[in-house]
Length: 419
Image (cartoon, rainbow, N blue to C red; front, side, top):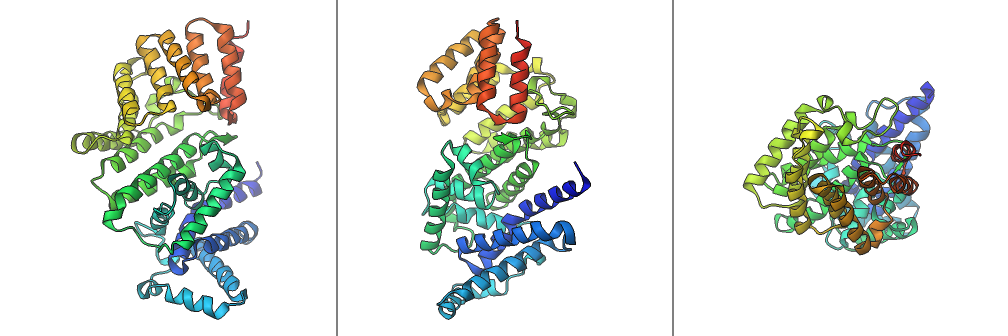
């Protein structure tokens, strides 16, 4: 990779990280969510074109906000009803917001407009799928194609869903502010789900040449930490943050020097981030002993069992199996059952896991096409000595994943079983 391309990549990463914050600041100042998003898109394009040659400004967030504001004002002035639109824009802005600090004054603040933007995207006028899709687009920075893959729907369908969500936000006259305390529980559920999906997309990208997108995992963790300041005693907020920290602690060992995937059982546990493990274990221990049990807490408890095991061989699989059974009762889900099949195979033998996989495939047509099911089947078939069937399962899984590191790993597993 050339030095010029490396610099371009750094600029693109910075722009992606700043985009949600600039959008949040713009919506807070001017309202008009969809118009603000268009203005931010134009500002980002200007940054992509100018920064690699002119250099990154001293205050890149303020630069983007200024450019986006100018684009937005130009758009308003170009319309036939300029005076009326500007009057309504000023009238809709509370006096306190008129005096609010600019984005350049918030750069070092412990919170920013991104969290308020996140709650706005989870407005109750939207359906749950639309809340999640809009937030992933506006706050998470995912492309429409990436969101479509997460929802297992065509990209055109997802584009229409996001467009309708922005229209409903505008029609509802939603204000850019944190929800009132009585409205927060329901909004919080959607916010937690969104942050979970953002983290998962970053930790195991659904497509592309890299296994991880560290910008997304870092942003999900940052926002979840901020969310704790809003709901410090909520067990599921604590559980989700613990889950992220306990999972992110293994980040450095998930690939080798060539970028190839390293499965959990083969990772060098001495390189796991001990500070993140300790923080995550402390969080989930306190949540489990002081709050009502929820699915994020159970998932965090599973991650803690893995992280606290000295080696793969010393993993407490009976405890993990019991936790997956609990999770399945709380949130029945084919993916949870798939993971339970792995734990069941460790406790009762690979054939028990294969039997559960067969039942799951009959019950869930969507999961039957998912590469994860075939990858697990290949592993279990290999464990019972059915090498030919295992090889075909690995090959099927490799064909159905869009992640190049996963494809390489699965193809390598299949080649090992060649006669």
